[in-house]
Amino acid sequence: MAARPLSPHLSIWKWGPHMLVSILHRVSGDGMALVGLPVLLWWLGALASGPDAYATFQEQATSWYGTVVLVGLSWPFFNHMCSGLRHFVLDMGAGFELDTNRTWSMGSMIAAVILTVAFWAAIFQA
Image (cartoon, one colour):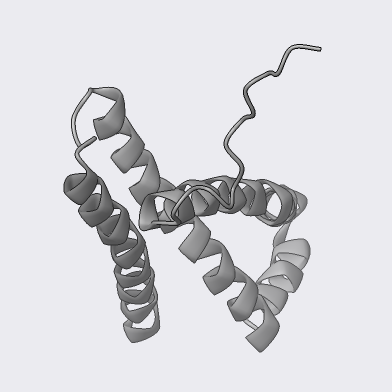
């Protein structure tokens, strides 16, 4: 048999923030689909079913565990949005330089956390 070239294995690559952002982008998208979609459908169903059903939803959503779920859904939303914007810039052909890519990767992760904190600070302050 001819010796075929081997694909690079994960142990060969040096881990960097760009790899983490890519993985988090996929995980956050899956998380929003698997957790966020049922919550959205429950909210829409309660909204369409009348005041009693909506009161039940609102009671659950404003409880401590409902707040944990909603905060837990907002970070993936902002993370997915920030990394999506980063990918949009990469698709235009910019930002492939190593330092620029590393900076934008870190920036997108930090921006997601800042946006999540600011979003919930604005909600709790209102």
